[in-house]
Amino acid sequence: MAVNERDTAGEDSRIAALYREAALEEPPPYLDASIRRDARRALDAPAAARARPWWSAWRVPVAFAAVAVLSVSVVAIVSREGGEPLTIGERVATSEAPSAAAPQAAPGADHAPAETEAQAPERTRRKLEARQRQDRRGDASAPATQSAVPPGEASAPSSQSAAPRGEPIAPPRASAADASAQAAAGASPTLADQERSAPAPAAEAAAAATAPAAVQRRRAETSAAPAARPAMAARNALTPAVAAMVVELDGRAPAAWLERVATLRRDGRTDDADALLAEFRRRYPDEPLPEAFR
Amino acid sequence: MTHTLTLPSRAGLPRIRAAAYCDPVMPRDPLAADEDLMLAYRGGNAAAFDELYRRHKAPLYRYLVRQCRDAAVAEELFQDIWSNLIRARASYTVTARFTTYLYRLAHNRLIDHYRRRAPAALVSFDDEDAAPAEPPAPRHEQPDAVYDSKQRAARLLALLAELPEAQREAFVLQHESGMSVEEIAEATGVSRETAKSRLRYAMTKLRAGMEGWL
Image 1 (cartoon, rainbow over the protein chains, first blue to last red):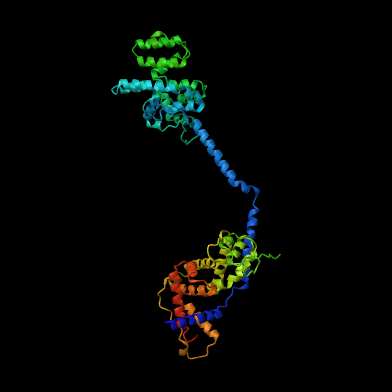
Image 2 (cartoon, rainbow over the protein chains, first blue to last red; image 1 turned 30 degrees about the vertical axis):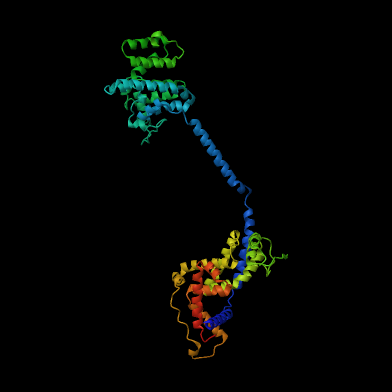
């Protein structure tokens, strides 16, 4: 066994020696030169990399700073425009007609956010009152209830729910000649809804046929002073009958308002009387009320 | 300008010192370890690469020639392997002998080559129990009995070419770079037992083929 191993080891060493004799290949000189040149060039490459323009070193810090500034700006804007927290009354109204409040809120939110914040408690209170009145009347008087509830809080049609907050965009038209008429017709569901809630009863019937008048009215409302917009929004929240009275009494003395309220109460229209009184209180908060109205 | 740096002997060079070593190395310093040369090259010393290349170019080239059996392909792979080494210099750390590191690169490049050009060659890497190639007839059976050393060398190379790839690789790694069984296993990515088995098969076949010629 040991002899065999010794013979094997001897053979292995002879094979190794023979292999060393046989294996004499070398890489060609051009390959040597090429590889050595690559090795030196690789060492020179960092120097070339260092020759980058001066601003390239600031790319990453500047990018981080830009991202940070943008993030802070977005957070600040969102937190500032985040708006008021929802009250319980608003949650109820919003769940019933999520988009109905959009046309009302849009002008105030766009042009006078501070004013909207100031009116928020009053609006909430009015909504709560309307809701309570609706509950008292019950389901049997549903049509009447609908008329009593301010349009902004009534169940909105699907077109209303899809309406955006701002001015709706008219769909593209085929011809420029009838652009104005089409613009009137395309005055959009939002405009038609506002017409339905307008003070004049005839406005309820104003549909596509009265579109030019609606457009004019819309333009007049849009171009009105910002101070008048909350009043228009409040008027839109009233029932048509009360809204008509508000239009009629607009600019008249407080005594005329109180007389109309008293007349309504005498006629048994207590809801309309309350709504008109609320509008009076909103317009003349400092006007003392007679004892009967307190 | 010639750098005259005296390096401690390799045996006295702690591994941690070698890892941190980036000083220039005197070219052709016989005491400089391969790992030190590679670290010096990583640090920007081109002469260190020249010395490293001088030491390893011939064994590596022969390894490739034996494995490819085609000089042109061997040259292409040879250049690729050194290029890979040059590119990887920045990430080089001393975790094993430089020889093992270099032949690991070579082995991987070879496997890529086999996969692209000759997938069948990969089979022989797993063909541990393949029947030995039919060796040329022993000397006493040859009609002409005049054999000089050149003929013996040619016969040995022919026998070597007949071996399966994995066995031939184990033999060449051991005899060209002086690698141990463990280092062969590490360079080729197999277990120590597998490397040892491959080496044993190769030697057995070569001994049988060279019977009467040695």
